[in-house]
Amino acid sequence: MKKKIVLVAVASLVVSGTAYGAGYRIPEQSVNSVAKAGANIAYTPGADAAYFNPANMGWLEDRGYLEGNLEWINLKSITYSDNRTSLYDGKSEEENFVLPTFFAVSPDYNNFRIGLSLTYPSGLSKQWPQLYPRTFAEEFTLKTYELATSASYTFTDIFSVAAGVRAVYADAKVRSAGQVAPGITASRYMDGDTWEWGYNLALSARPIKEMNLSATYRSKVDLGLEGDAQLATSAGPGAYNGPGAVSVPMPAVLALAGSYTFADQFTVELEYDRVYWSEYDNLDFRYPVSLGNPILIAAFDQPKIKNWDDSDTYRIGLTWDTKKSFILMAGFAYDETPVPDSSLGFDLPDSESYLYSLGVRYQATDQLEVGIGYLYVDKDDRSAENSIVNGEFTGSGAHVATIGVSYKL
Image (cartoon, rainbow, N blue to C red):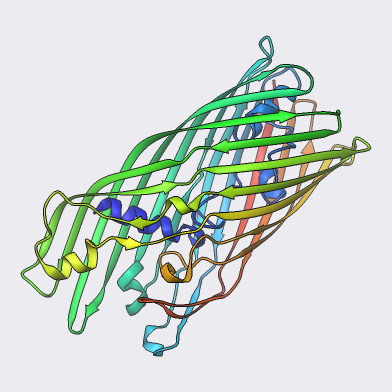
C-alpha cells in the first residue's frame, strides 16, 4: 500500500515540489546546471562533474575540488477546470522546497580521479484540497536521495572514461479521501521507503582543445517501496491496516552533448537527453492478503495502466568568461512530457516544458568561487479526457534558484 502511494506520488513529480521536469526527474542539481538549463554534460569545469559527467574530472586542474549548493524550488499552483461540472474544479497548493547538494573531486592519481556526489534526482509533491481532486491526490509526496561515487581514467589528452555506483534512498507518503461511487466514500493513508542501487557510465573526447564531445548513461533504478497502509470505506464493514508494496521506476537516461569554446572565453554547449519512461507501463499495488471489501479492491488494488512514452529533451547552455572574475551563464531547454492523455491525472498533470535560465559565478580568490543560478519552467496548458479527467490544467510551472560555493584545494 505504501508502495502504491509512492508510485502515484512519482507520477505527480513533474509538478511537485521536488520535481519540475518531464515525469518526476530533477535534472538540475548545481549552480552551473541550473544556470544553463541543464546543459551541463560536455562542459563541466567544476566539482559537479562528479555527478553530471565524471569522465570530465580528468580535464580539471590537478587539485581537489569541493562544491556545496542550496537549491530552492517553488512549484506554482495548478488550476483544473472540468468540462462536466464546476463542482469538479480544483486548484493545487503552491509548494516550496529546499535541497542541499554536494560534490567533490580528488586530485589526479596516475590519471585516475575519484568523484563523490549527494543529489536528489527524482521526487514529487502535489496537494489538492478540493472535494473531487483530493479523491485521487489529496497528497502525493516522493523523495529520493542519491549518494554516488565515480572513478575516471584519462588515457590521453584526448579521451577519458568513467564509471560509478549509485546508492538511492526513497521514501513516500500518500493520502486521498473522497466519493468513489454514489454515496460511498473511501480513504487511504500510506507511507514507505526503500534502498536501491544503480550505476552510471561516461566518456568524453577532446579532438581539439576547444571541443568536448561527451556521452553519459544512468541506469534504471526500480524503487521497490514497502511500508504501511490504512484503507477505509463507508461501505463497510471494510478497513485494512497492514503492509503494502509497489515498484516505481527511476528511468534510464542517455545524454549526448558537445561543447565548443570560442576565443578562450565563450562556450556553447548542445545537449540531447533520451529518458526511457516507457519502462513505466503500470502501477500495481500489492498486499500480503486480500483486501476483502470490493470497494477497497476496486479503489486501491487494481493495477493502474500508465503506458508512458520515452521522452526527449533538447538543451543549449552558454558560458562567457569575462576574464575579470565574473563568469556569466544562460540556457534554454525544451522538455517533452512522457505522460499520455489516457493516464493524465491529478497526481501528475504534466505537459510540455520550456526552460529559461541565467546565472553568474564570481571568483573571489584563486581557491574560492561563489555563484547563483535561476531557472524558470513554463509548462503548456493541457486538456485531456479519460476516466478521471475531462477538462483542462492551467498555470503549471516552477521557479528554481540555486546558490553555491566552490573551493579548490
